[in-house]
Length: 243
Length: 173
Image (cartoon, rainbow over all chains, first blue to last red; front, side, top):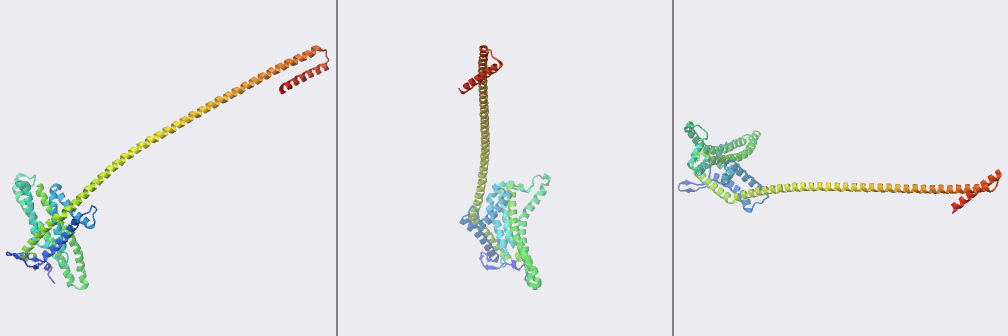
């Protein structure tokens, strides 16, 4: 039986080496591009063609998606401040959603099941929150390390705890997405392996489960993209509002 | 796990995912989101405007309705007043006619009574004059002759006959 982790392996398709750096195009990158191309086609073509006041089916889907993200941003960051973050948060949501969903196509690859990728995005968001915080509040941003209303004697204890909790945010953000994607695909691979290796009279059972789990995975693809973007909004909202 | 073992691909995964995200962000921000957000805002504005307009129309309709109801009530009152007036007028006319008729009847009655009275007195006058004439005629006859009872009777009969003849003659005239 093939290892259930086998499909997480990356195969180089077009080798590119620049100055000792391996920037080869591999199956993970190609799968991601396919997903992103679908997103671009879905969003840019109707928008370029012109949107009508009475929306059609596709336009309704696009509008619901954008309005959903916009409401999310307004809820956690606020309407005034949040307006300029809507394109970034929406792009992040669509990027993660596209990568999660394209991975469910058999033979493709889920780039969000790579911890380095989710880690880079989580770290990037963490750095972005720091930049927003310092540019908005100056050194007063460090006040985020002291929760309001705590006794002064506790401040030396609270600051390290708050620093740890701040640092835990990108780690949890990265690991959550990576672990969910990896676990889902591993379970699918295990069940499918069982279905393929077992006799037909027994094999239909795990195969039936793969169908159910696949449906669940579609939901998880949406939920994880939603959680990732929601937490990004929460973190940005926190540094803007400072408690 | 391949995700931790294939260290050599980390560079390309990070590079391409960041670049791809940056391109996606740029493309969507430039070409997709502005029209979609504008369409959402436009629709929101239109819906808000439509709701406000319909609210205003509703208020106007309410105002017009109240106005019409007032006018209707006024017209109703006016109509009632007119009907009342007509009824009063009709009653007055009726009473007047009754009074006039009564007066006329009374007058006719009075005239009839007067006529009866005058006819009666005239008749009495005539009777008196005939009685006097009869008495005079009888007395004349008595005085002219000494008469026996049969004569007397005959003479009285003659007198009566004469008076009746005269009466009849008068009536014929």
